[in-house]
Length: 254
Image (cartoon, rainbow, N blue to C red; front, side, top):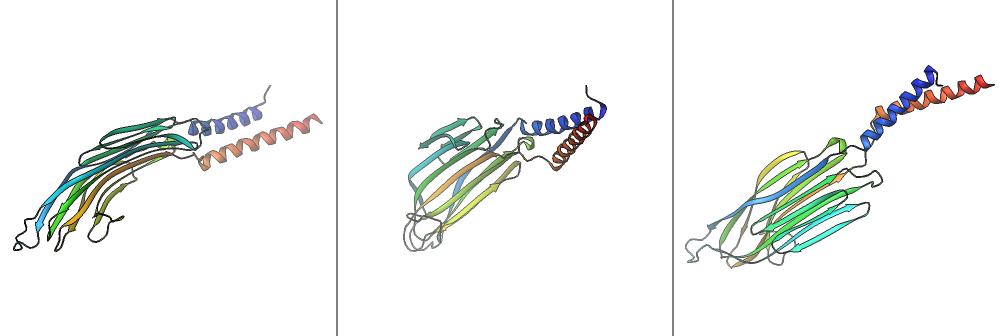
């Protein structure tokens, strides 16, 4: 039979433990999506009297779509080269990617998982590379619209992020450089976000061979919950009351 003090101690300890359990077991879905659309370009003839008409000709293309999911050190991975879609699913979430001509899209979701899985992350990455030939003495301005939406559930102790890039470079160049460009939108806050991506490349006295890459990627991850300071304080207070009650019980038994 518990006396009033022991009952109060047990109740306080139970409350502290239930707060921690509720925080760790919260459910929800963390979501992020990224895409690039409305791709277009504009040509400017830098030397109208050279007799060369400003032109841009698209040639070969390549595309990749990758969707990964990691949980507790492992996961499912699916890849795709060419137009189309791919997805990956696992205990902690799902990822989807799609590649179409002049457009890419990516999304990922993460959900609550059992406590024995300390870490999980869903990741999607999609890219489309289009090669082109640009006439001499011509400036080309590329543009596209980045469309993002990220959301997270605070009780899930999760975070989300999205990245979209529009990149231009000469053929053979690993990274954009003059003449080249890189324009990107990175979102980490929850909610929608849109931005026009711009970039320009210029040929000089000779034909230029280049490529423009459009890519979108998303990532959502679950962060191991950390109890609030108030939870720790409540738990310690409960433990202190229980310890005090045990000491008084031992003294009374002597």
